Image (cartoon, rainbow, N blue to C red; front, side):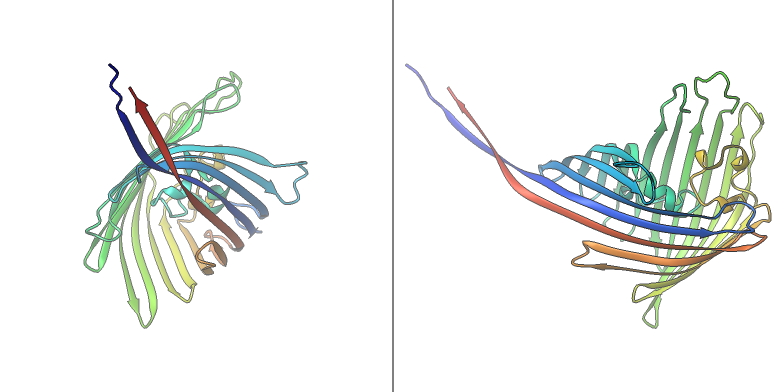
Length: 348
C-alpha cells in the first residue's frame, strides 16, 4: 500500500531592480594656495542594479558602476567596477558584507576623512559593515566598517581602513565620535622605497541642533587627535592635533555654513604620499595652523525623492591665500520591487 502526503509551502520573495545615476561638476580655483592645485572634474556615473530580497530582512544585490569622465578620450568608459553584497536589515541592526555603496555608512561625513571627489570616484566599500541603532533615541547609533582598498602585488600597495562612528542625543545636545585606522603597506616592487604607514584619527564631538525662527541651526565642536607613523622612513610616532568648529543655518534647501579648523598639520606625510594615503580635503595639511571653509549651497529633491540637485560655492583659506570651489551634482535613484512566490511540493 502506498501512502501519499502532499505538502505545499510558499515563501515570498521580491525581485529588486533599479538604477542610480549621478553627474558631478567640481571646479577648483586655487591659484596661489600652498597645498592643493586648481582643476576641474566633470563626470557621469550610471549604476544599474538587480537582486533578490527574502524573509523581509535579507537581500542579495549585484550592480555595475560605469563612469565616463567628460572630455576623456576613452572610446567607451573611463572606468567600470562591480558591486556585489549581502545585507541584513532589521529595525535595530544592519549587517553588510561584500562590495556595497559607501552611502550605506552613516558616519565619517566630515571632509577630514573623505573629500567629495573621493566619495564620487570611490563610492564603494569592499569589506563589512555593522550598525546598531536605538529606536528609543532618534539619531542614536554605533557603527563599524572595514574597507579593503589595496591588495598587495607588484604594482599595488596593501591598504585598508577600519572605521567606526557613533552618536547619542542628550536633551538639546548630541555627543558622538568618528574614528579611522588606516594601514598603507609596501608592494612587491623591490625598487619602491616607500614605507609602511599607520594612520589613526580619533574625532570626538559635541553638537547642538535646534530650530530658531523657522531656520535649522547646527553647531558642532570637535577635537581631532591623530597618531601617524612611517615605519621605514621616520621610526617614530607623530601626534598632530587640533580643534574644529562647524556652524550651519538652513532654510528652504539653502544652507550657509562655516568650517574652521585650527591646529597642527593633520596630514603629516601628505608631501610624501599625497591622496594615495589621505582621502580627505588636502588643506588639513596646513602649515599655518588654520583652515577655513565658508560655503553657500542649495539642495532639493523632486519627483518623490527620485531626483536630487545640489549646488554650491565654497571659499577656502589655507593660512596663505583664499581660493574658491564650485560644484553641481544631479542624482537619480530608481528602485522597484516585484513580488515573487516560490512553491515547493513534496510527494511520497
